[in-house]
Image: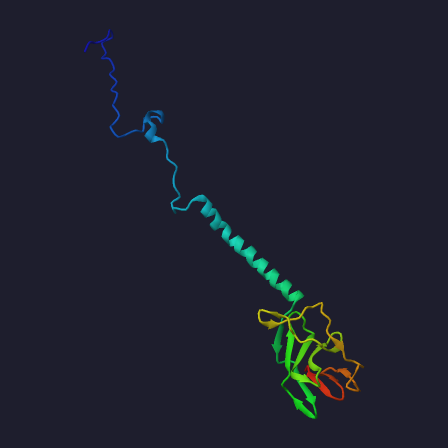
Length: 198
C-alpha cells in the first residue's frame, strides 16, 4: 500500500455484504411477485356477510319480539279472550233452589265486565248474562259465546252486550236490576242471578 504525499495511510472503507436471508434492505420492487402482501383471512373463519348478519341478529330479534307483543295487544284490545274466574262469586236461584254451578268469565283488559254462563238453558231462554259494573247494566245474551281465540272463548269489544234487562218484561214479569256496593242482583219471577263482588 502506497502512502500519499502527506505520508498518511489512505482510509479503507469496508463494505459488508448483506447476510443471506436478511431481506431488510430489499425494496418491495425487488421482492418479486411472490412477495406481494396477501389479504389476511378472518381468524374466526367467518366471512364478512355472515358476521354482519350475526351482529344484526339481536336487533332483528328485538324488533320481532316487539311486533309480537304489539300484535297480541291489538288482539286483546279488539277481541279480548274470556278468562275463567272465581271472583266475584256467582249464584243463581231457579224453581225455589239456589245453585253455585254458574261459570264466571272475565274478559282481558275489561275489568268491569263479567259473563255468567249457566250450565244449561233455563226456561228456554236464560243461559248467558253480561254485567257491566261501570255502566250498571245487566243484559241477557241472545247468542251463545261462539267466538274463540286459541281455544278460549272470546268476545268482540264492539259487539252489543245483549238485551238490557232492567224494567224489561219476560215470562209475564218484570226484571229488576240492583247494583249495590257488595252485591249485584238481577231477577224476575222465574230466575234470580247474584254476584257477590266483596
